[in-house]
Length: 141
Image 1 (tube, helix red, strand yellow):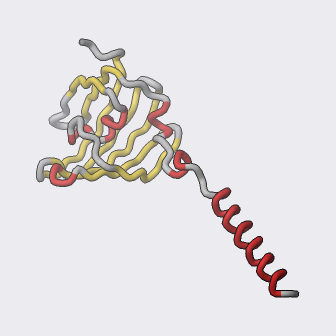
Image 2 (image 1 turned 30 degrees about the horizontal axis):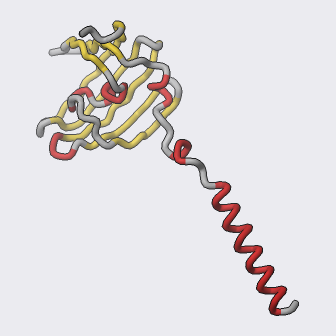
Image 3 (image 1 turned 135 degrees about the horizontal axis):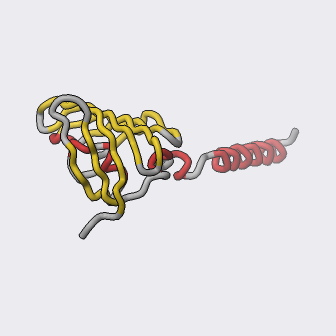
């Protein structure tokens, strides 16, 4: 094979290899998919009812469903890592820097009912709770 032919073969191989890498790289939305379990749910007024001793019930106006994943850390949406994500269950860990961190497992029972289990650190103290979240309707003004 001549030098020119060898150069052409190397150039073609580089182009094909580069094209196949670019072609097989998944789009950004596939690399970082939205939480499948949250897709069935809707923002609005949610009642979160704790279980066990010292259980509390509170109503929240949820504008971003990720708020259900970090109930002990207020409305701030902290960076999170998805551990497991299926159409009916979601597990995430999150880090709110000095405010603490946590892990939440959310199971979707119906489009209006979820089971939440969360644990972590909030304001320097450990927490762990099980709760049921129920969508009541749109947020009230």
